[in-house]
Structure formats: C-alpha cells, structure tokens
Image (spheres, one colour):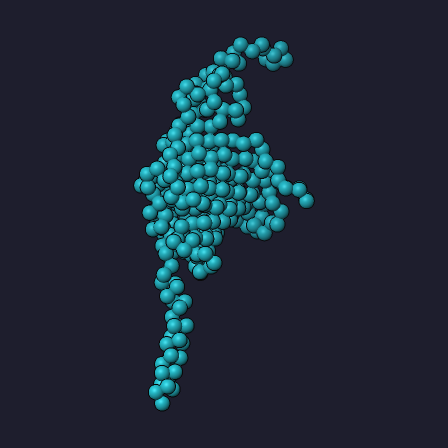
Length: 292
C-alpha cells in the first residue's frame, strides 16, 4: 500500500512538473530592453554586420540592389557615442551569380562629427587630406542614416523606450539558444514611440502625420536577452506593391572593450573648406567655348 501511495505521489509531481515547465520558461524570459541598457558602459561596444535590400512590392522574390555594412559601435551610458564602419553598394544579383560589391566606403563618427574616407569623394581633395569631416547637421546619407548606429534599421534598439514599445507589440517564443520576438508597427505608431522623428528611407524626410507604411520585425536574442539578429521589412506607402527595404543585422561581441577616436587633425578637411578648395580649383579651369 505504501508503495502504491509513493508511486501515486511521484506521478502527480511529474505531471505537475510537465504542466508548469512552459509557464516557468515564459516567466524566466529576460527583458531585452534591460539587457541592452546594461551594455551602455564607457569604452565598451558591439560588432555589427548588416545587409539591406530594396524591393518593389512586398511579395517580390527578386532581390533588388542593396547596401552592406560592417563595423563597430562604441557605447556609453547615454547610448551610441562613436562608430567605425565600412559600407558597400550591392548590385542586383543576376541569375546564377552573386551581387557585386562597390569599392568600400569607410566612415568614422565620434560625437557629433562624421568623417568620410576622402578617397571616395567625387571631386579634388588637397594632398595629405585623407578624411572629410561633416557636421552633425549635414543631411547626407552617411551622417543621418548610417553613422549613429552603423545601421539602416528602422528600429533603434539603443533607444530603451522604443525597445519596450516594440517588445510590448511582439509575440514571443523560446527558440534554440534564446528567444524570438515578432511583430508589426505602422509608421504612425512608430512616430509615437520614437524618441526623435523617424526618417522615411524613400524620401530622406521625416515621417509625418500623413505618411503611410509599416515595419515588421523578427528579433532573436540570446538567453540573457541581448540581440543576436534583427530582421525587418520596412514597407513605405500603401497598396499592393509598396516600396520595401529589408534589413538583416547581426550583433556579436557585446561588451567588447572599444575606444573609437577621430582621425589625426592634419589628415582632415572640413566639408566647408573642401567646397572652397574645389571652387578655387575650378576657377583656374579653362572656359568651355561651347558654353555661354
């Protein structure tokens, strides 16, 4: 009798354990927003690798052209403070052949200043000047879209308030090695949850009250809640065939020791001085007799 009673208790415990396991796993899921905030330390950072592709029509199966980004991002208690990355234009792959990469474009951002590799500048550059410095208010693609986070993702994972809002709108499940979060947000919701007005990638202008579009995401984290991969589809406009940007970012080496410094001052020329230099160079060019 005692043996049967003991067996019954063992079966009951086992059944209760099986019932409680999923709930316990769900309760144990870490908070990615908090995990990210804990990475905001001086002289630490993360490595980033990202592929962006552009499509016409959200159901398109044909890859468009794109941009490849590889680099490092330095963090501080306030968030990203410096970046050192290289990007390439990607051609549209032809049938049976991979995309071709353009020559590399290297960029360094420290604080509010962005430095572009002078070898990629389309005009003349003075001897010895290896970098072109652009001010924070410059509206070029480098400074505005890539330089802050070495990324073209529409979701700013370094903005804790945005991350909390994104996670609130996500369905989650445990996967091998961590967790997966999925969800969708409209452009208008994105405006409300963003710390600063988001920029529409199709126009380079701020997303306004009448802007139509949506962003869907899949975010993989490790067991501690740190992002490992973020895949988004940013669909601009309405209708059956909107313009779509698909971004796939992988994050590695969280917490690595990292200090990014500005290039040597004697190797830098400002955008303003470079324009003046180009004007002087063109002033000495002979006049085309065919022009009036």
